[in-house]
Image (cartoon, rainbow, N blue to C red; front, side, top):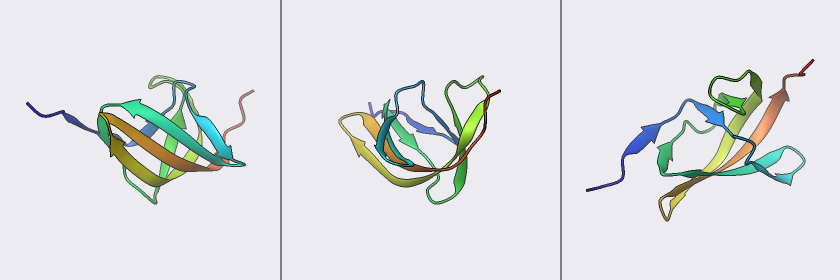
Length: 80
């Protein structure tokens, strides 16, 4: 039985993102997930939460039943 593949249209971080550079982040998610690359996606901390910004995924890798994303934050929503 293979791993199910999940299609995602937003990036949900759950606060687990790691900053690589100024506006470049890496996020590891359990399971194999498919994301659109090179188009702006909403970034949220939780699925139900407010959008914290917009990002473009630069790289997506599947390894050891995990999905690793490298994304660039292109806009940040101010939280007031």
